[in-house]
Image 1 (cartoon, helix red, strand yellow):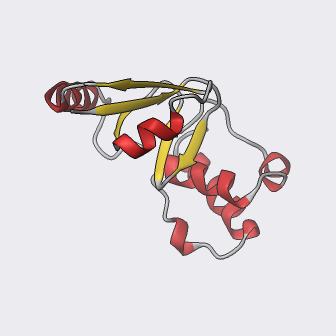
Image 2: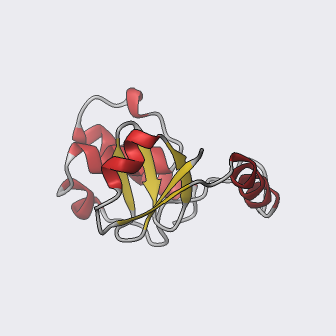
Length: 124
């Protein structure tokens, strides 16, 4: 039996080691499914075949414009001031959204600098 979750409100959300991005349906454990079930920010489903999820992921990869292209977790660049107001977990979620290395930064100042760099590399 498969379970999925999709973030429907917000840009990114990090929970139990999974980073969910807006409108992206991902497979989750039963435990995480149950945890998110009553949260109005998520759409959760049970009994999703794992083959269907594999097909969806393959189709999404095939539709990509080019290999190695970073797909930003949002469509507009955040300013340094906006980033400085965010908490550690929010900054880390953004870094993960850019496939950045969270372990390479030690404090919020370094996290902000990395995000600004990743945004530039992504063309934002």
